[in-house]
Image (cartoon, rainbow, N blue to C red; front, side, top):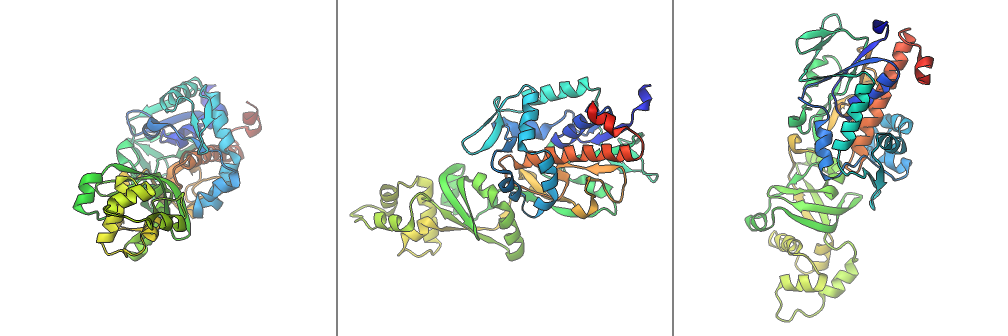
Length: 409
């Protein structure tokens, strides 16, 4: 009897929603996925253009610290679906993975489209129904799910509506207004650049220029990597790794000062020794280039700091800790991800909304953030798996399915 199986609606066809869908459908549940965009997983496809960084290979205890304040909440779910499980899942779809020199894990295809095609084919074979251009509109007075002007019959709901970054790809955080009475932490940009008041000279000549093999320091944290000078400020992987504390400092103090080490492979004493060599008739720029092999953009930053009043009697200290005043984070629409979302207090250990039994949530709509490097997708997948398993447990407790039989399928 086709109608004897329970039916669950999944709102959102990103990684969290689709992995939840797979868990549910594999357990024998009928699943309808409602996606507001014309096609699924648009943000995943964009993220995969430069190489789809699925997860990271570092030890799990270190891995979990990347989630900062949210680590205690995410840890049980990531332990239940760890990086090794995500890599195995990817390979099960015919997409072998490899670990790069940085420890990041990628599909060998280095893009998302082959993985997504295989995944959607698997879901279709499991009987999943995908409905695109369908807008989540909240819940009716009787608690029923509302989608695009109609009530959807379902025994449980998994919300995977995304955060508030990259709104053109479908996640704009508008769902928060559709859950009255449910605590939601305000959305804030994460993994974003920052505004810097560059001089016209530096902006005009060096906007778009990378800063390679540098280190950034803020407070007690140091991050090696690369960054990019932009017309409006600075961005890049090393900046993103420090974006959370920088953002909070700006919110508290009105600005933040980031220290830029232009030669992290040399200590201050060696920098001073090299700079002490006689300059002869060389300009300062040529002296910095010849003594320390600084790139033109790095030299321009030193000159910019000197013109702004930095002490000229200790160039080595300036090269090792060049101050950059950050005035504001870039807008959330330009951020790679977002912080904020459904408060953890609003959810039980199964990721079910306490105020709405039978409604579960997963992915970036929960209140957590993480740096780039595989941590974002890992948490999306892990919470999607957790929400699906929570929904199955909830249905089993209500007698809707035989959970033991479902696990054996």
